[in-house]
Image (cartoon, rainbow over all chains, first blue to last red; front, side, top):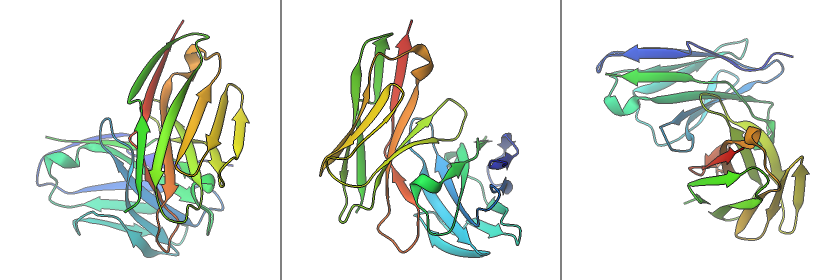
Length: 114
Length: 111
């Protein structure tokens, strides 16, 4: 059974640029959630995808967008990058209807905006 | 608004020195409280789920307990490999399954 795989592991971008982060969910998991974790903070919910539709969203602006594909993998896109977007971006997959106990997190993508 | 507060922010222990981490929450209709462990540069790893006041769960040197307003993670005779950030989280009161996390407690166990 494979876990959650995220790519790339590290990324440096310039303010104003756009970035795409990728996530392959765990086998059998059809729900994907994305979280942003700033240094010294807990993860903050960005949005969730279920069956290729956005299923819920946290307090993040529209320049944060996402996709889920038929194989349940997912992308997080961030436009017009700001310095405050520097963070660890975590993807978590889960079986339908589960909550925290069903989550499997990836190791994250460390994004640095300069 | 759902709130999760963890204390202390950081804790330094000597190997074998037992202690407890605290997670207090304000949420209506708690649907579970979750503890995760996070190593540097890694994603959170699930430890426990607690659903009702009085419930306890154990795993090796860790024991999690739950009251109506807070949860404790007790660490008995810790070892250096227990060093990590411990996060607690509760489900958002929404129509979908996701979590609100506290800021975590960074635990360092020295040999």
